[in-house]
Image (cartoon, rainbow, N blue to C red; front, side, top):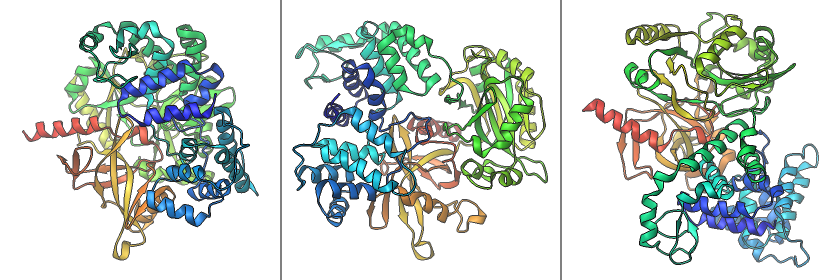
Length: 613
């Protein structure tokens, strides 16, 4: 497949903010994509060359792209940086300068998707002496052959700045639209102008003209005809939940249909997105959701640890799907010694504790273990963790995600031999009594936990989903996990630090600012999360500078507390946080797709109004 065809799709996706139109464009493209090209295409439209669980990154800095533009165009690096400073978009600068390059490229080969994909993957394989020069050659080779917008999107992909708005929901729906036309024909309408079958909207996604009255009327009947379509979506979603790779799912759908999707299995060694919890304001609300009786478990202030074992091989993954096996050799030994069997995937929470007092400590105290690369054994002694096992997804080759929770819990209790402050089954009771749950909540808090989790006894395990099968109950106003999208250099003694941070929530893949926070951080690292530490994290992520203000690639996630959520026209989310303060960094365990959504903010806003009223 020619890369120019994929670039044309990028342009279509960039041209609209409407989810249905994006889904339509992507599905039409997938229909004509050959089976061998599907996996690279699916990754590239996400701005990636590896699945989300694969830790390999291109790791290319802006300056290396500037040098590659220089090599490909013959234009001096200083002139390139000047243009970049004007526009703030290195992708557009690349396109503009490559279009007008001095060196002749008439003999340059036409780029293919495979060539671009292969060159980008090779960037991660180059290490050691001379690797920077070889990376430069690979990038310059692509830019020298690029025509028009191809250069822009190559640069953006390399820098991790593609952002054409293809979230998980759009990818899932596009696969359904492309490969299961019979199931989805009832959720389309026919345009009276171009006679193409398109998604219901005010205007046609194909020709742009307003849809006819009949088509609009048909759209009103669509919701009643979604049965088969929803079944297909569920199959696609389940296959993705088990693989974390839409490329694999799309290829299965194209080549084997629904039967192929049903054959997709859990793979030990490939991380699965963990099931997430909703929040309950009261015990009654939680029980009304999960049913009576329910299992009530301690809610630990640690980090999720998904533990895989096959034979003597053990893999540990965080909620963000990061492989942290080497950072936790102690946990590897606990699994081998205290968990029966050698073929399983279990879900757990690793909680730090003080080796002297044996009491639990907040997550922030042990978060550094996740990123630690050196002195690991020493760190394990200084910052030990206890693994609290609370679910099991696979055992002895059998997928258990469809089994009711009570059966999964019974199996856990048979397999895990409790070893205090090493590995234990999470502390829990089963009850339908609100009074008993309140007493258990007080005990949980006294034992140093955050509160309780309430779980539905007959529920399956839904990877990656935030469903009503389990709820968290903490009795406090919910803090928000938000992403830094911009920052300002401080003044006076804080002039050397980025000390004010513009925070954003997630709205279907688009990050919307909700306020600026500058309190809660420390001036010395030994006192806690510091301005210096956050500045160090943000500096390599800077994409644009405007005086004291810098825009950054969204990657750093902070937990932010606040006094109140207010309506505000100042920020694009429509809300602002009153008296916000940073509580801790959540970057080690949460990615951009895990931060709070605009829907979460709106719900919290409504809840606080009820409390006041």
